[in-house]
Length: 542
Ligand code: PRP
Image 1 (cartoon, rainbow, N blue to C red):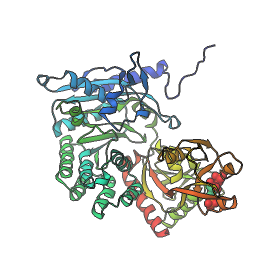
Image 2: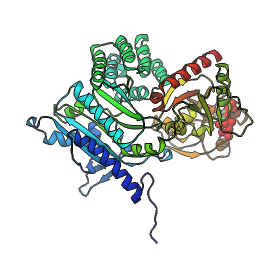
Image 3: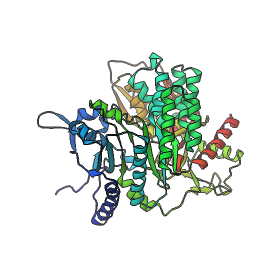
Image 4: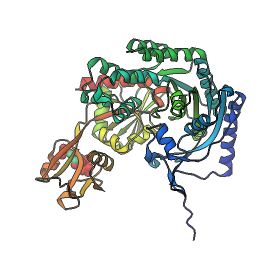
């Protein structure tokens, strides 16, 4: 019998869905066509080197690799733009003038199956080669908006940034030679990109970054919202002409679009490294996810040895299709907060109460999972603590309160905005008293946090075997299941009472306020109001 299973992260499309999606794709491509773009196609197979050399933020483990008959390392296209840039760099002649290309293509990338992500997804987009001006960038953004409106009915929000603002800041920071490594730059980019304010504070402390640079660094991720206000503030903070030029560029592109639904975010830096200059993202209200993104990538063309200005964007077809199903439910006036039942939730609810946000029907003993506050503005939902991240990442909740331990282990893609200062403990490696690491022997580690344990020991290049345990981890080394444990330690009582001791500390932990990437922008006022209330309450509670 043939096994009729389908691999994870891919799906069949029945004819009803196929026809609906085809209709949507046609609507999108028609918009591009009417704007003068012509369709092309690049192969699904490309050389691995193309992507690893074009962008060092595209990680090897994120690509699907194959070895061809000649022993060449190939990948399934993990990005739509780089192959088109390759194609243009090979064939473009100056006499071609401006070239406007469109595509509808499958992209293959490692996905988080636990979060329902797909490893094969379809993108439709355009690329404009040959000229650069704020007007061309503005037109591209308007075309993106038209394409989204042609595909779905939801309200659209566009967010504009310029990577040169952050790059300009990096120039100042990199005057300090200790910060020169690629890893440090990528770590910093990741922290800014995920608006991880607690992480940025820690970074500044670790590298002893001076006060004036630290204050700009902590401000950049928070420079979002109304274009004029953000640009004025960003201009005041600018430390060199590059940063000032980026602000000016955003102002000019914005005025060229003549649109009202565009906001700015100076902390918007696509993790893909090939963008230079303007970048933007498109959100559809109520979906909780990003529908598309794009920007200028002249620097990528230079990597191919060509001086061809280039700008483009891609829309995620699945997101556009799914948004149709979600757009009936209007949740825009309520902020939903995910709490994991237990101590963190109790403290959070207490703090909110002190700040005047009360949930009249809530009681600790109730089995109800959803409670509205007395004004109808806020709703708390109780989920399992380990699931807070996924509820927020997927946009089912706008905000969440989660322990840093759980957040690290889940790896959820969210904005980590506030260290709430409560729920303090440590991640530690612990073992029976007197234990010493033996470098000649493989280390067996029992833990509820395999991801954290793996990344900790990877730093030493240590080979370890992980045994995933779901609780009472302290038992494992006592009964010989493991050599050590990686676990949270609060008072140290559990370790002491079981004859264990800390071998080394991994990191400090406390409760974090996390925010869904789209909600921060589509419910901007409500989210910032809630965050200031929480910040104040946390301050007062200290
Ligand atoms: C946590 C943790 C430790 C203990 C640490 O366990 O896994 O066992 O608390 O606290 P202490 O340092 O104050 O003793 P939890 O109570 O969540 O139960 P579990 O062992 O079933 O995970």
